[in-house]
Length: 182
Ligand code: IMP
Ligand code: MG
Image (tube, rainbow, N blue to C red; front, side):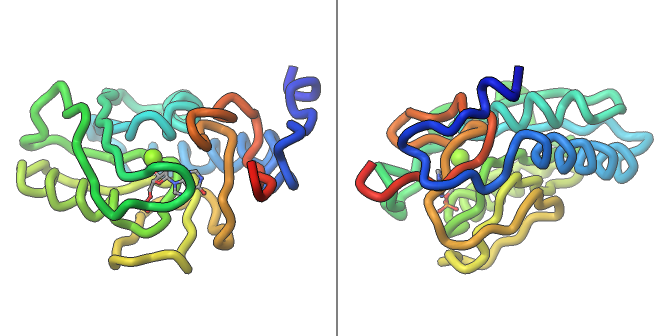
């Protein structure tokens, strides 16, 4: 199935991380999280919408009992950050006393995670960590870091495996660099 779907989309400049590399790394992250949270019941907190594909795979790679919840924030219009983060959808469950693991698609300026970490910390979870599929460390505007990082990448706009550009390309089974002008 992946072989057919992995055919390059005409708007993609190059495939950065292919389906097999994604699956292998997500499996590793799942093993690491399962070890680190042994004896606990973490809540995997997906940040909509970009994390859904990653979360779906990560969840099946975690071998302990866990919960899932979602948050939706908005900070992006097109390719560049507006710098403003807004909460569009809050957690369904209380964060108090929970082991929260934020699952994010990509860390860029860090503004989204900085906002989420500040907001969620104030609700007194038992623990609060971040798992991001991708990290663009050169783009940071505020200092934040993630305990679990899938891949560190250069400062290029990427799409696929949940990541979009104007709501397109989330369904691509690889992470690719978008052609300029698209
Ligand atoms: P930050 O607040 O600048 O760290 O940006 C975080 C959010 O911006 C991510 O959750 C993505 O939704 C979006 N984003 C940042 N860089 C990219 C990219 O290269 N492709 C697609 N979305 C991105
Ligand atoms: Mg996101």
